[in-house]
Image 1 (spheres, rainbow, N blue to C red):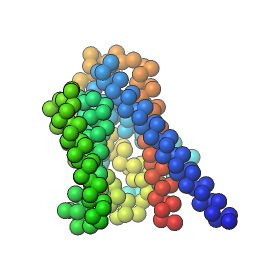
Image 2 (cartoon, rainbow, N blue to C red):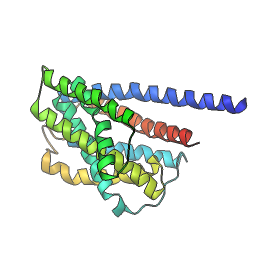
Image 3 (cartoon, helix red, strand yellow):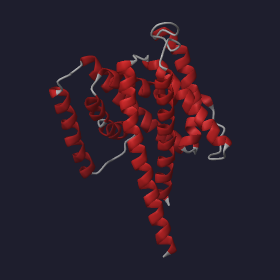
Image 4 (cartoon, rainbow, N blue to C red):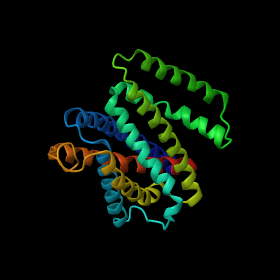
Length: 251
């Protein structure tokens, strides 16, 4: 009886965590769009801010003994860190150039692309039922894109690149966690600063740094502070929810 109660409590915790994560994620999408539309904040610079704040949050978590860092060879994480940059930058560019509805629907294509990558590159097999569920997802995204009253070709290009890089990133994260025997927080603890360093080098070549339109330009402090806090909360919440979910499944 006690075991059953513990399992029920565990399921409720997971459900509550996923619900909270969903609500926070929705808020972040609207905040992203608000910052792009009304403030014109540079995309890669905003992503760099996200990564730095994410790493600071993880640093605080490890100091609080929420997780224990594991020594990892940086050379084995370079490709993963690069894909992390690409997936966040391209998805933000998709949001910047598309409507919120189109942006969200395009992200739904991540699942079919992940399955395609695992099928053709990793020789994994999926049941017919799972494969059939991909048909309505794909058709829905195509129909929405075709009939979108604010169709933007550049936005669709960014959406497609975002889906592709995000799918690769998700597959590689799972592979690296298994290969290095680490959880998501331990992996991101190394990955976030590496991705930050990559963007720090790349930003001056693609975006202004100082003056009008630059990261150190005259931006609204309240808007930037709100965005950083919400983004950090979402990222850490996703990590914890995923860890709890997979631990529960494995047990």
